[in-house]
Length: 150
Image 1: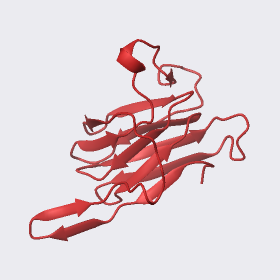
Image 2 (image 1 turned 120 degrees about the vertical axis):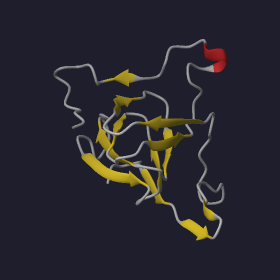
Image 3 (image 1 turned 90 degrees about the horizontal axis):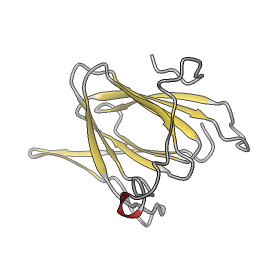
Image 4 (image 1 turned 180 degrees about the horizontal axis):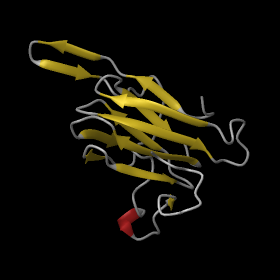
């Protein structure tokens, strides 16, 4: 496990109407959500890898579809510096993953159908009024990057 990373399994409560999954409860932990977005990723498509200097991401993966999630601890003072994790998340393993700043992350849709991800970051994209630089260090175009998604 990477230090500071939160992984919470989500339970789907299923009945004749479909299912309901409780994602987040403020009485379990506090996470200051600043915005929310959804992204649909087509089969075989990769998003990332990248990292943030100041932002934590709160990803929810519950389906449809599945991702292979890649995580690398790139923080200089972390007790798990250099550790890599890979998880299959989505329809068969619904979960919430909170990724702290300095943890490089990316994912690939590994299902035959498109996969849905929700993100609830703790910082606004491009800051208040979208006037700041994007808090992102992108690694996907670096030929010599140690962060590879296959």
